[in-house]
Image 1 (cartoon, helix red, strand yellow):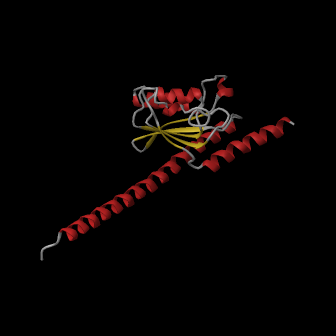
Image 2: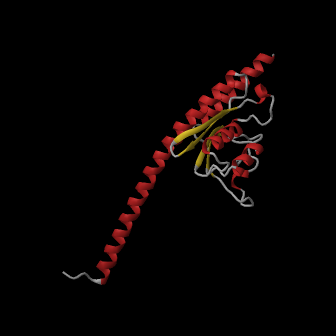
Image 3: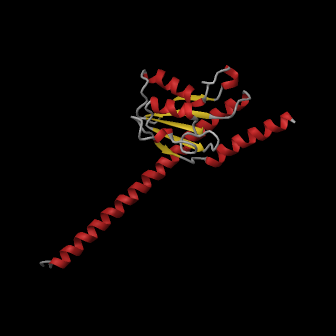
Length: 187
């Protein structure tokens, strides 16, 4: 049986729509898998933040993942180390660079419980980190989209893929509880 032009056209349209629907379903499935992985690694960053809190530090934690494995961890130690540079992200970047034997962290994803400050955002860009996943935003000092977005400035030679809001409530609650406890202890 020979198809008319109209029937051929309708058949092509039907196949195109089926292909688009299959591609959309595959993208949604891949995104769901990525969301699960992001939550898994953010939980690890939250564990690092607990270490900071046990030292009396602001509970910020970070992990860096390369090829599906955590290669570096860090947590806030500014007061403990008496160093402005002892942020979770900088510590993790330093450890990841040592682990990989390169200052370039291409192919790495950095998970951090609080949006990076200007120093950490700059270090992330300089280290060529491919992706950053943030827990909660920092309206007072955040440079990953709140005050500035250093991570994605087109003027730089490297821009970072950014995902925001992963386990946002848990990350925010951890920080809020820490500061409430700190205020009560000062009264």
